[in-house]
Amino acid sequence: MNAGGDWVLPESYETDAGTVRWARSGRTGPPVVLVHGTPYSSYLWRDIAPALARTRTVYVFDHLGYGRSDKYEGQDLTLAAQAGRFARLLEHWGLDEPSVVAGDIGGAIVLRAHLLEHARYRDLTIFDAVGGGSWERGLFRLMREHPDVFAALPGYAHEALVAAHLRNASHRGLRPEVLDAYLAPWRGPEGQAAYYRQYRQLTEADTRPYEELLGSITVPVRLLWGRQDRILPPEYGTWLHDRIPHSTLDWIDDAGHLLQEDAPARLTAHLLG
Image 1 (cartoon, rainbow, N blue to C red):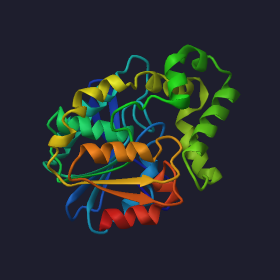
Image 2: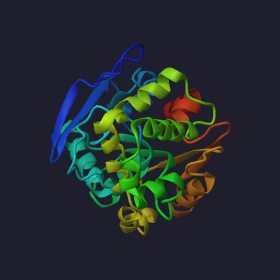
Image 3: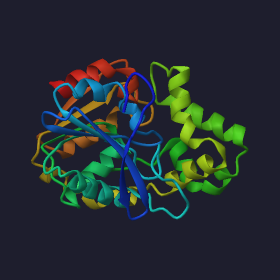
Image 4: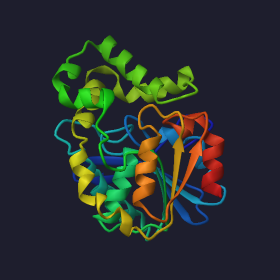
């Protein structure tokens, strides 16, 4: 990876359904793994990872079906499958108890990996994330209910829809070059197919199995939430906080769903603290 130029993931890990691209930086200090959500990629961490790498060994990766990792028809991109891959990726890296930071569906992936796949963490930071309960809502629910309709959209309409969805995640707004970077993996016929392929496989059925186990988490858990999150509003943060008894919950003012874009300095300060 390169914070000052192109975002590069030079390493690869072969999974049951394709190649996952990843990168490591820092090389000294305790390990921390940064986990992105949908429809994003590890590019989300371009400002956070270099700051953490001054004192930590930082791992970033693109989930299968996202970013620079393999995207093709027939992949199992459910939260259950991604959680299993995440647990095995930690084993591949030789990480016994890393710190883990996750947002959006990354939250569900790391929770399921910890509670059902027995992945071990030193501590866990979750922000503006899918945790459980009723989270199939809004545009996401429509895409799940009518995947064939959305997949058949003309290219210009698909790109406009994705751009609007990305903009809705930021309270402060995305710079044109940043929006373009997030759009890039989903452009063209293959990108459009990949976009709706991953959405139609995301379901509450994969978060329900671990919900009753949330109270059994013993590692330190820090919850952060943007007060202006329009995708997963603040009540979703409260829902998780109520079910993980020893967790802490901090609100980030003037920030939406993407703390990495709306409040990178405050997010970094929390992670360094």
